[in-house]
Image 1: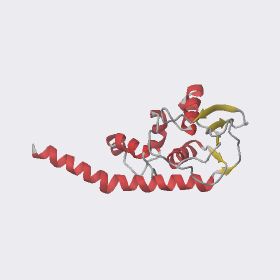
Image 2: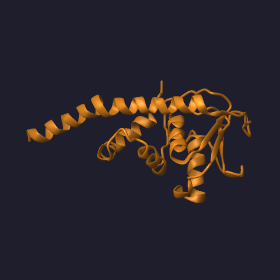
Image 3: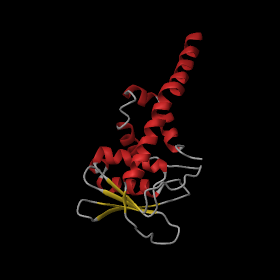
Image 4: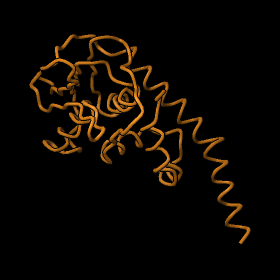
Length: 178
């Protein structure tokens, strides 16, 4: 009986003293990189106070749109990515896509967008090199989007990514929330 308890304690120590700090540093680096390197391009929203995103392909044709939905916690960027997955499938995310938002990405979306820049070579456009405010509350992270993030977590061994998947998702959803 004592062995399983000891193992659980070791897992908790490993998460809080090893895995979590590495992820926190990686997430901060990714988010900051997107903020500092996004292409500044004004794009007026279709209506006042509506945050929207649009994904364009290599020739500039709009291939997916997304709108912030506070009811289910899906941000405009994530909605556009999910809509693109519904159109072409996640296997076809590769390629020179550009995601343009009517508001700067929040830090959570910025870290996710960084993984799309690293994995698929995407470009991020927003009105300014800044972060939008993060507010506590629901944040929807679809599994196919999480898979892209997890694929870039090379600092964490694969078996730990699987073992800590729920905690990593929770950490992303709560990242940089005041």
